[in-house]
Length: 433
Image (cartoon, rainbow, N blue to C red):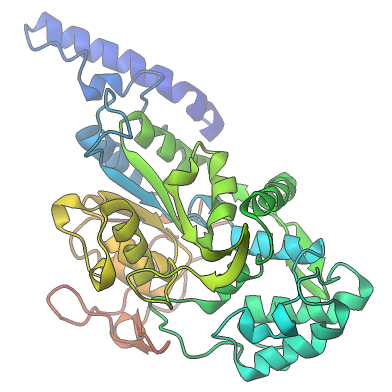
């Protein structure tokens, strides 16, 4: 059976099997389970995740088992105590990165505004002197402060190139470091920079820009590239059907499903709306308001002005917004009986909030060292590893260096990864690809 045919027939097959099993139970005098969550999960409105060849090994069986065990088709996802399922967005729910898509769209359409006083240090406090100088040299003469930079024209090519290089490579076009002085377990300045480049626009305007970028990228063919300045960059983003199915199944079984993303919040909201996410169900990078517009000043978490939803910053945002834990305690694990039951992600930025999940954790394999060390080591048996659903990577030849460089440190270096007992995690082979 082809995967597309399986997707169509799976709910019907599951319904027929359930009817048969229920009938057998009645014949044997057993309890009628026609109203319980397992049976209800076979209906069209409350189906399990359908079969698909892109699911690796027994991952689908284990996911559906969790959904059946913890789900309740009669429970609203908004009900108090509904089990929480958290998804990263970029390369977890979609293939490729909506932060990239939005930044490239802004540059391709001449929407990034000249900073106040033409001073790029007002955009990000983490930009190095070399970066602010390079950006000013390339962009200062093109527009007045607060006016859009013509990065979509020939005269704006150098400015576009400098912004792309700082954002994509964390370096200037001359190869100098673009960012410094940040806690690398709570901040990724390039991700924050993408949100800060939206300054000067209202949330409604940013949402409109995001809708246009989404339409452009989802309608583009797989592998499409676009030219920004002189850079050839990715020009497509596609939703993963398999993850969309998983989200639908979780919702149908009464799970509270939310997004925790390191992309700008209104951008993630625009993309999430396609899958039924409301703004209240999406957490992303936020900046302080400047009147009715966005500023470049990042919203803090845990009384920490330097964090965004990144590694420990994702835990902080979930703890603050979902569980009402404030201050420095938001960076610590919430009580186990109140934490999310499920987490899905693809990168080192996701490892902390995923590790907090109490039932299962789905790691999409993009060869990210800290995440794949944790997932392949699978200390408590709750990790699932799956290849990317579109264009999966080949097997990484070298083992992940967990024992020497398995954990990102706050100063952006690496150190050995430790397990819960404080023992060094041994190097892990890339076994799921």
